Structures are given as structure tokens and as C-alpha cells.
Length: 207
Ligand SMILES: C[S@@+](CC[C@H](N)C(=O)[O-])C[C@H]1O[C@@H](n2cnc3c(N)ncnc32)[C@H](O)[C@@H]1O
Image (cartoon, rainbow, N blue to C red; front, top):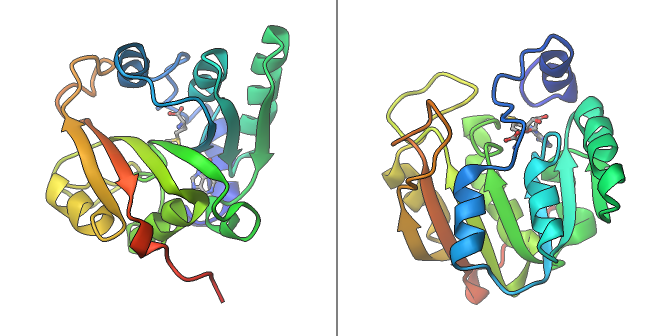
């Protein structure tokens, strides 16, 4: 079993190994949306887990889709969302397969702790996927974590230089900073980036 299979993630949820769970929306996202919310539109939340960020975005008027490998996470996301009466589409999916159904569909993508969960060998593929999901003038809002040297994971670390090298062919970084609002234990190793899709860099469809 590898991190490329849903059973790996399902097992972590089942065993209570989901130590990433904050039980609330990502604090740097909350702060960003208070300060400079992107225009309302459709947003994909990749590796959405129990959907705390998806619900935050939906409460603020965005049309939200949450995707995750884990059926259990998606079930719990539904259960947490229903009482609020929010309309969010949650799908149990491999994000790498989304290009087939959602190419050019989203105004924005929110990335938090999905990039660090995927196999580092698939990072270029992930960047291509994110770009492919977006409209030509779409945007990516990301809080990268953990941002440091190193190799082991998940969570698999990446340096700012590595992230720039991967994303800049397809995106222009419009804003970037180390957030002051990180959750406990994540201070100083998160990096917020807002990026605009490069129109000329829309990757070719998968074979
Ligand atoms: C570290 S957890 C973070 C969850 C959520 N973003 C949060 O902060 O609570 C990573 C999540 O990505 C999901 N995931 C990993 N690889 C995936 C893939 N290829 N497709 C869909 N989801 C994936 C896992 O099931 C897990 O829920």
C-alpha cells in the first residue's frame, strides 16, 4: 500500500492517524479571506479532508467542490456540512483524475496539505493538474507546508525554491508571505502564495 492509493489514507483516518486534523479552518486562510478575499466564484479544495476549509469558503459565498481520496473523510465532511445547510459538492476522488471531468472549470483552487501528501515524484503532474482545472484567468491560493529542506513524509517537505521551480512555468506569483497565523507547531514553516494562471501555459490534456 502506498500514498498513491486511497487505502493508505483511509487507514490513517480509521486508526486515528490523522494528526493533521485541526478541527477548524486553516488559520492563514481565514486571515487571508478577511483581508483580501478573491472574487466570488467556483473553488476546488484538493485533499479537503473533513472539509473545514470548504465550509469556510462556502459560508463566504463561494461555490465549493471538495475532493479527497478517503471515503471516510468525505462522509464526515458531508455530516459536518449538512447541519449548516451549506451546498458543497464533496467527491471521493483521486485528484489526479479530475482533469477529465473538470478541465477549465474552476475560478480558483485552494491548496493546503494536499501537495505535501502526494508522492514527490508526482509534483509536476500535480502542478499540471491544478493549472488544468482552472479557467484561463483562474487563480491558485496555497498555503504550503512544511516548507523546509528534507525528504521523508508524508508530509513531504519542499523548499520555496523547489515550489517556485515547479509552479512558475504555469503560474505567476502575485503575493507570497510567511503567515503570522499558523496553527501551533506549524509556525514559520508555512508559506502563503496567491498565484495567477499563465494563459499560455495550459498543459495538454492527458492521453
Ligand atoms: C494531510 S491530509 C490534509 C487534509 C485537509 N487538507 C486538512 O488540512 O485537514 C491530506 C489529505 O489528502 C488526501 N489525499 C492524498 N492524496 C490524494 C489524492 N491523490 N487524491 C485525493 N485526495 C488525496 C488524503 O486522503 C487526506 O485527506
